[in-house]
Image (cartoon, rainbow, N blue to C red):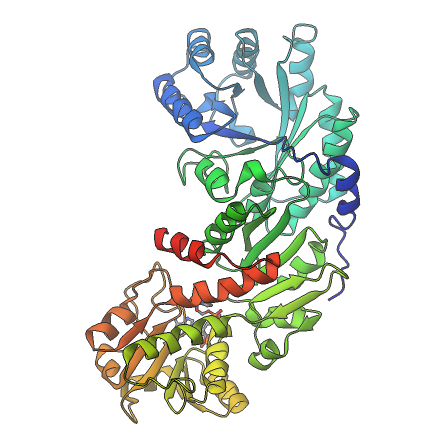
Length: 542
Ligand code: NAP
């Protein structure tokens, strides 16, 4: 694939000249405080401090009743963290519907009473800033903000907006836009990255650049890498002041926020959906444990080609790939490992440092097949020390997607006779033809028992959270199987595995496949041996 993207193509050079080697991370974590009373807010501020936030954004518009002088005094005096006061009106996405003069008076009062920052909206910033001209306390900062709840404009339009905000006399610029696609975030990274350079040379003000919605998550996680002044981290999951905010706990505990910097390499899992993936926990914990300068993020991607076109720099160094992109990923790679080519699916992509080319691999089959072999060997019934215990077995793969192809290929390689059962029969037939197996529809599984002692491998997402009551095959059909494997690993014990165990089969969890394929990917990402014991410990906890 050609690296035609505009994004960050030249950032390596810029990083070197700007901040490379300092190891400093300037970005702050701000916890939004949205209590309905001052007392509730003080409790939340205490939690923000305990959770590791650097400052709090006190959202005055969330208070049920507000006595400015008294409440601001208490909040400022009792806050153990620096305070940023925001009194967001409805017309900019907030809760406040009252009089504008009173709103701006309250913000001025916050400044006079010792707030560290206040946030005012661009629309009123000129008037507000001229009203406090010459009266600003030392070290007090005004953030001038602009929120776009519809989309993310072009880089040119965002630059014009930044210039307009700077012209108001803002100490800090805040741009919040909305991601309709993950590639929208790249435009905001470009703005914060370049501003950070000039900011350090004192030409420009710092920028908070955040992109709202689930597709904008990386704008929040990668803020220290691309020079954003701050990111928001919530005290509790789901209680957000803007869509897509991660928790403080995740920023610090999973994403190693304090360790990130301009030269941190970005890895991630490409999928849709991707929120359920345990991969970020696994890789980030391992990166931290061995001191590897990388971050691994969820990448909610709609169009994988567009993603690679835009995120084309060496900063984006490696990717795991899951539903539904494993087959498309293969077409987007510049080179594909022969095994992945034979399987027809890629679950690991490395950007080759020497030329930036994308190289695709399949590590799924190794993890799954090894786990199934281990399961069979442990059973003492099919122990065949000279070869694979799969040799000669009838191996039924349910599903014909990326994982299904990988399992079917792996089982065939080990000498099994392979049957593929899929909802869409034509897809099962395609694989059957490719590897020399039999295809049946998923509905036929119920009465499919040509022999006893078969192996069953579910590679569909049936039974995955949240639909944990589903199973791909009725319980009574499970008695013909000696081993049942489920690629689904959330939950670890699926209904299929529970019923298989009750039917007397050996069961192998998707977690074993997950850990096995993750070893392989980790070594490709880092060129370091995978910390296998650590992987097991981490997965046992989560
Ligand atoms: P994929 O390429 O999108 O394939 C999905 C497969 O599931 C297709 O065969 C599809 O059938 C079938 N399917 C989906 N929903 C179905 C339903 N409601 N009823 C019947 N069949 C259904 O996905 P994938 O990448 O292969 O991943 C499949 C599963 O394996 C996921 O749950 C994933 O989390 C898991 N996985 C686990 C690991 C691990 O390490 N444990 C690794 C990889 C994947 P059609 O062809 O008819 O659409």
